[in-house]
Each structure stands twice: as structure tokens, then as C-alpha cells.
Length: 120
Image 1 (spheres, one colour):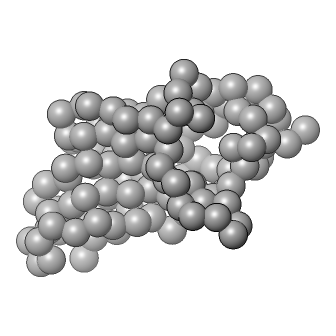
Image 2 (cartoon, rainbow, N blue to C red):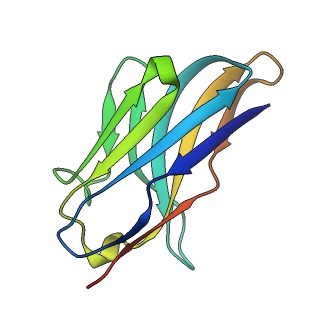
């Protein structure tokens, strides 16, 4: 079984910073892409940022120049450094990974979600 465990969410003032982490564990053969999505109540889940095993990154326009995605392949961990946070960044953030496992083959996995609240 494969699990994604997130950490690092919380409450921060506008203009502040937070760093999210997501660690994958289990019967992992290979991780192709990891990333972050977010979903506000009543809205569709949207891409925030992704990073491939080779280090190529992709960002939503709304977070470019403020957020940075990175990964430690040896630790099967992806990070999201969020700077210059705005109230509209408030929502639940979900870790996502495309993982090949010895049991299930290639599948997409999701974390449980971590709340980020930007408020004064």
C-alpha cells in the first residue's frame, strides 16, 4: 500500500510564508510526478504546482513568482514553499503523486489534505 502524508499547513497573516511537505511511503518502485492541488468549498480541485522526477516544474498562473515546488527524490518527498500569501490562497491543499508500486502498478495517489488559512 502507498500513502501520502502531508504536513505544514496552518494560519498565517497576509504576506507571510508557509512550507508544506508531503512524504510518500509504502511499496514504491518509482515516483514520476509529485505536486500540489487545492480545492475551495464548492469549487473544483485546481492545480497549484507540480514537479517531475527530472525536476521540471509547472505552476498555476495565480501562484507563479510566489510559490516554489521542490522534491527530494531520495526521501520521496515534495515540498511547497509559499511566500507572499494572500487571503485568496486560503483553502485545503492536497498532495498528489503518480507512483508505480509493486502491488498496484502505476496509479495516482492523493494525500488527506492540509488546511492553509491566510488571515489577519
